[in-house]
Image (cartoon, rainbow over all chains, first blue to last red; front, side, top):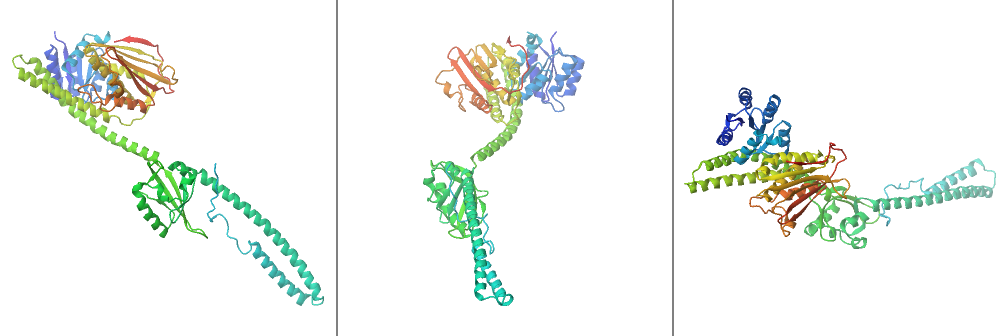
Length: 124
Length: 452
């Protein structure tokens, strides 16, 4: 049974790209282009991991990370951003994100992070 | 200290003697009054006594009064001379000890007097300036104009600040120029020629501060623009890069030209991303408020940010952090960027894997300082390259911007610290940052070594 990953990005082509990459490695992907849809999908589908962009139109990835962390702290959240600053990284950590990705990133980096988080690598 | 008397024939604080305050005038007036009294007494009130007695009485009274007045005038004259000398001595002390440069010049431009601050400001000795034309202190390019300005000033003299809105400059003895402000004060003595007293202030430090402020404002604007550019570019670049990789992975081996085209596309997306990052890094040198920064937390954030990339390159991270270190008072973002840059440099130096050791500890033999080191087991840096390492735009990497270490060095200097490098080809490189600790105590915990 493939593990389900929820991908959230207001740039739908970016979300689709991540989904294509992860599907090619055998994961099942759900895509949301706003936080409302993302939270609804999270509640209904209970994905194994969430990958979210930080900058969303109506909300932000920090809010999604906080929501997931509050409801299911065992589910890791990966936050990604096209606008990396140390402050953004600190906020990502503070919101409960398990990993942080700077766009653009090699596909293998996304896959590697997702796999290691799902395998419990970070707990080692 | 050399004290000189101004002696400018002008003493504004000294009162002009009035009719009754002048001893000679008082004596003449007293004589006239006594003579009048004598005429009245001798002719009308005392007609009986002989004129000889009257004259003797008059001479006795007049002599006594005149002697008293003369004696009083002499005392006053002595007091006046003492006051005058004291006043001149005080003026001389003011003149010599003033922080501003003071120059007294005649209408024809001759320098009559200067104070010690002016000598120091321009690098000349007293004898080298007194008697010379004031234009010796003006830069070559404005000397001719200065003469014309001086002549026109004495045609309609008044006290005023000079050159408001102009960039006035002085010329030192060694030929160097510096910005200055001048206040001109016209003096018209009762006797002698008109003078001008110039108060001159060296404003080099103020101008430098204003320049830095303008530069910081420019960097802030540039930073805001760069942030927008980086965000707007990185999203499409991420899509191009990822899709190119996907297409490459799906492409069969029978189409080498298409594979090559896709690789070119992906490589150039990566290159564009490097350019955006370089611009952002340069512009991110924005002035921000200093705050207590926990160096160990910076290390942990850096590991979180770069951990994935390092693991991917088969690089092990080893930390040895002194958790009792007090924080550093600094720009958290700039220090974070600096550390991240060093860690990513270490990654680039170890394409086949290796170890990165990050350690924090009090600086040995330097009270109040801490050290943070980032050491790798990579290829090392040749000795001939080391001196150039912190130069702007110097890079040994094909896609490097040559900004990272230059900015690191600059950031450290701005924090009152320094960065040093040791390297041995084939063994690795170690960067050591030394920073002043702030007085506030950091979180207390045990020292330890972690492996990630």
